[in-house]
View 1 (cartoon, helix red, strand yellow):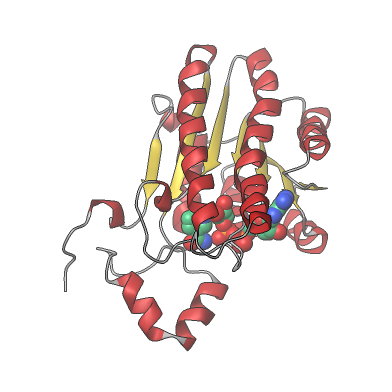
View 2: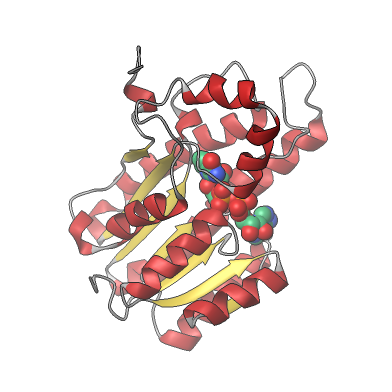
Length: 254
Ligand SMILES: NC(=O)c1ccc[n+]([C@@H]2O[C@H](COP(=O)([O-])OP(=O)(O)OC[C@H]3O[C@@H](n4cnc5c(N)ncnc54)[C@H](O)[C@@H]3O)[C@@H](O)[C@H]2O)c1
């Protein structure tokens, strides 16, 4: 499918699992890509693989965010898709009783302030074009509580969800769609390593997933490509859950 032929897409956190899988999918669908990440080496490698441009950017830094979208516009003449995906979940963000202000603030900056900055600085391009699709990465934890808390992460993703809804409504009649992607747990190398060491920890989570497994990054990327494309022309201000059924489940199949 070539649903994104010649669309210009900016992906943040593009060197990571979901970002890179999405970069590959967008490239297959014909998009022109600007990949942004803090990690210069992995970002350059990713850009080379998909034939895109790499911009080293800290998404929590306003000047970097402005430069990132300006690069896309200057190189390609439009900014049609923004996948605001960069995010962190550090180990020192844990129960509210043990999480300190440093960890709280860092996670809010990278996960929530970044989405505010990216939307603030991409929307003017889209207003001038009269069209655009923004996909902000939230999480299933924005709609469900967890006893294995990462309190700042959860609060940041709830913020992403509420902000996305509001922007989707505010800019709907200007041709700009804004949707929140809520992935369930993704099978990443880090997660696999953690769970290989601790099968009980894995089982505690897997029992809640009706599909009985975690997502592959490519499955998340397929949902992003849908939201980015005109196939989703009537989808905006949505909480787009791609979670293997977790959020709908009470008792799961044996
Ligand atoms: N993996 C999951 O199970 C899961 C589930 C739900 C939601 N999410 C969300 O999906 C998004 C991507 O997750 P992932 O699993 O691909 O993570 P990942 O750690 O594989 O990739 C994240 C990327 O973001 C980059 N990054 C971190 N801080 C940055 C900053 N300040 N500026 C620019 N880039 C920065 C990292 O260098 C990395 O390349 C995140 O927002 C995450 O919270 C992930």
